[in-house]
Length: 108
Image 1 (tube, rainbow, N blue to C red):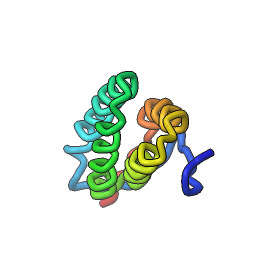
Image 2 (cartoon, rainbow, N blue to C red):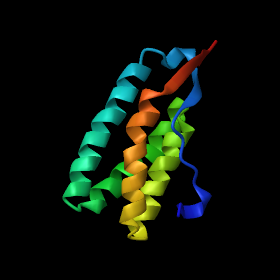
Image 3 (spheres, rainbow, N blue to C red):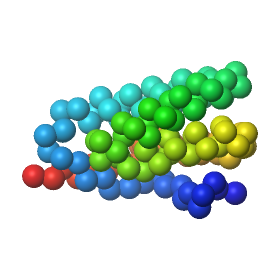
Image 4 (cartoon, rainbow, N blue to C red):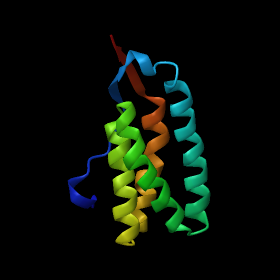
């Protein structure tokens, strides 16, 4: 069961400020790199590192317009604190699909 009524997303249109357009490809690539690390840490049962990345996502992602990823970061923290590792794994497994299916809509 999802913590705090959190709903998974498999795709989304994200409105982003035009002035950030040069940064977004690197931002998305960094999230894929984070996921590689998150999966490694999950396999090692180093949940503290996943919580740390979650904290970073919670703070940084919304500033780029990626509010869902900020909520994902918050869920990482909650799930680790509650030792709900099955749900954490389920959430981690949805993220590659989500990142592959983000539609960026640049605002003028």
